[in-house]
Image 1 (cartoon, rainbow, N blue to C red):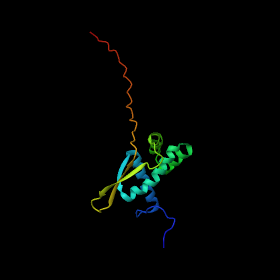
Image 2 (cartoon, helix red, strand yellow):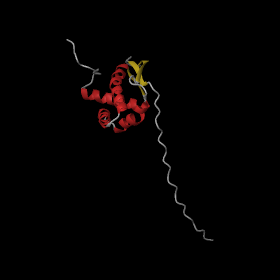
Image 3 (cartoon, rainbow, N blue to C red):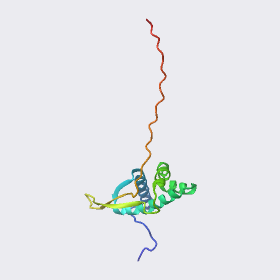
Image 4 (cartoon, one colour):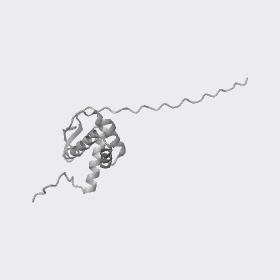
Length: 141
């Protein structure tokens, strides 16, 4: 019998564990711009991440709330919406997967998933410390 209408890979995990795995991989990809994982995991997160990027490009409050809910991380969602989405000029195909050989140990096929466009993050400017008040010392001579 075929499992018609069932999408996605199971990764040998229960539903909540699988969702947590996908969320953490998506957050790592958004923060680091490129991650190396198994090819099956890379293919699975590409589908959901590209949908999130499309929503981030559209903007709007409802899309922002949906992205925050899906990633479950406010900092990463803000980074995606404010920094990454405005820099992407294409309409689809935001991510690329390159094969990265086989993992030593279990021989699992590895893949590197990264953004197609070059993304530059704004560096946090170091906050200048306020100048210390100079105290005039009276010299007693």
